[in-house]
Length: 387
Ligand code: PMP
Image 1 (spheres, rainbow, N blue to C red):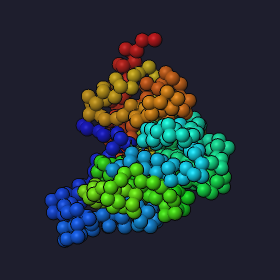
Image 2: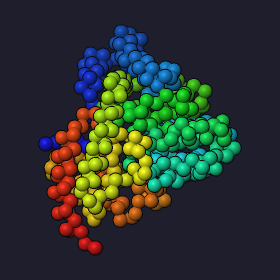
Image 3: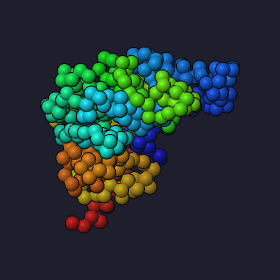
Image 4: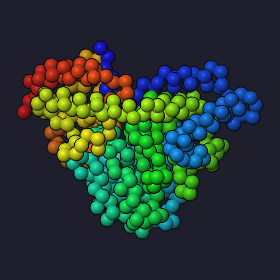
């Protein structure tokens, strides 16, 4: 049996996505900038993708800038907004639990003379709102907070965060890394007061190397890539037509039977948590005294007492079960090394944590198989742990 429980790392492209992409490779391979028929055909995919995504976000079409994925969207948002707004101040706020594609551009900006505040989080990985409010100053030009954390599935209170930012400084630009949140939540940036929103296609059953940045009309950002100025003068380079076409199809598909998909994911998550609790010596992270519905539906982070996560990961792989270790994609900065650490998870658990992440096609049977295998493997591995 093959059980893919690493959907926070990437998802399998939907069949409809693969088909749509193939059309752009087989027949409609023109350059969207070309004026002849082949160009017009290709441009149609980009135009329709912009329409579909703008409608899904209740945004304007010109507010969607296609990128090479989440990493580029985050870089463009942070570096672009910092450079465009630096006359108003050089202070930026983010959290200790962001993805490296947020932390690393911010480290770069610190080298350029910007000052960055890294907010703490509570034991469930959520921003402490009072600390955010106290950190915002006149010179704060940018705040960046993720929608859903990729390591533990904490879901930030984006509406409250947005209100606090606008109350304290209405000129502060608000960026949200929604790479794990988009598709699991319907996100309307205008309603939420989000100025910049990063999305990646491969987390929603679309292709790798494609994504977009929503850039609210009035918000100023500078480009980070220079060339032919294809998209609003903000992003140059021939558009990745197969990627954009696949991304658009993935958005369409993920929004079909949307409520059922969410209900299914939460059912899986609750079932998994109940069943893993049968094992003893395990700790599910990020759900202390909060309802499961306040966390993202697709991610469960579990620490296994006296077991090394890499060893368990490969033992599971032997049984056809694919997962990530708990600190998947954590920053390698000494002070910011990972969400689990920021949440105050005891040191002994940091190397004993696995992330299980589900998709709409994950089944209860797959979870049963995974739990049964864990029940067999974990006691054996524990016997090898020296104290
Ligand atoms: N932010 C978050 C929260 C992520 O989970 C990821 C992917 N692991 C990224 C950014 C980077 O996205 P991409 O892989 O599309 O560059």
